[in-house]
Image: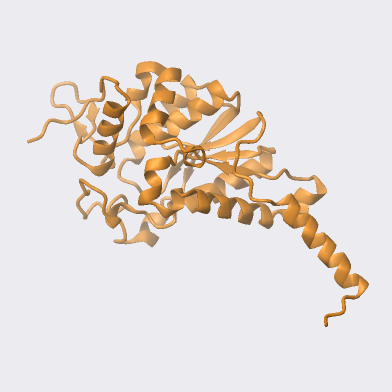
Length: 268
């Protein structure tokens, strides 16, 4: 038999209150400010458009430089859409030191490796989404935003653990637990990490949502893992058209029944 004194009971009551307060809720909260992690790619831009134009959120956009090959064009396109979506504020965060830590673990930050044309573990950047979400949540807690979003969709969950609903549920709980006392006191607000995958939205459906809100502008998003190939006549950057991300883009656009107006490089 275990005997609990009054201090134990007080601690138990406190812990039970925290458990109730920090229940793993990954459904979208009520309208208000939302921090959106946006790369300038198709998925994240369509997600941000959905939240601001259909759900009525005030968007605070966060874009990362983590040493990726496509960082320049990703930042350019993210800023382009920040204006179109009339976001409240955009931060471009330089964590490119991560490239040195990643070393040869992945081909997105290591240019010496070829880019895969179908899924391969070489395109997985270790716990990238966990890092992004943690930083985004720090901003959200600071501006009293209840929602943090990123563009993970239903097709991602087969290959990417940090896109799965169970990961989202877990990191939501952990991040709220890290600020449990300030949330309980009312100084901070509980956050919800959300992605289209949570609501069963796949890539083609997400694209359709984006097209409904942005029209042909969605073809200005950048999906290619590479830094692009220059068109010899116009000098514009073109999607390579052959990396895994470009191929997934083509398939989703076709599945959505749209004419693909993305500019791809011609095969040699």
